[in-house]
Length: 290
Image (cartoon, rainbow, N blue to C red; front, side, top):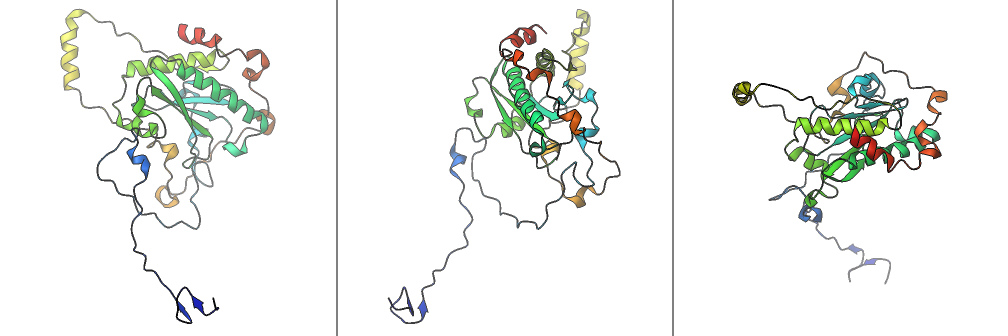
């Protein structure tokens, strides 16, 4: 074909097709049984990319929440790792966060801490999976809201096949919260399991509220008049995962704590020794009896 003819029989002409500006179609996963919504769905318009991303918490002038949090805010603490829970029960049997003490992100971990992260991930997954009514434990890392390493552990209830897969974190804010007594008991059992290998458990089981039979009616009347509780904070709504613009929060005058020195961070956890290779069975008795 001569160079002046491009797809037509007319010299020096170009065929142009008019493309309609149609929104993207709804993806197939909206038809999956695990997708939590139904009805008429639309895809949001995609915002234009920003030239420079705002700093996360713990970057630049942004204060680091994890560095400033005391050990009492966690359910278990060790020399180099800490485990915390949400501030109140949510829809899943257990939602926990594993954090490093040092102000490091995932790609910044030295080799020994990276190896410890693998040990701690397996150990915490086993502890959560040992709870009654838990079928699987999903492990996630997003990190768009905070520069301090934090790994999410979400327990899927046994038998709830509709909750399998990608959308478990969405279901956490949709399902009604579990009872606070069960939630506290689960936290205490996980903390006791982890303490079998060192560290300090800080979560305590719920205390039994003993009372005389004559006070039952008065208590029931008081509970009926009680104001509704606040809605639980879900994984998606957690502060660690909600990026904020620099203008929304403004400069912070509080400096984050210094990260641990390389000499301190380079020492492996005591639990990573070969003698503890058989930990997958022994802690089940320890956690169950705690």
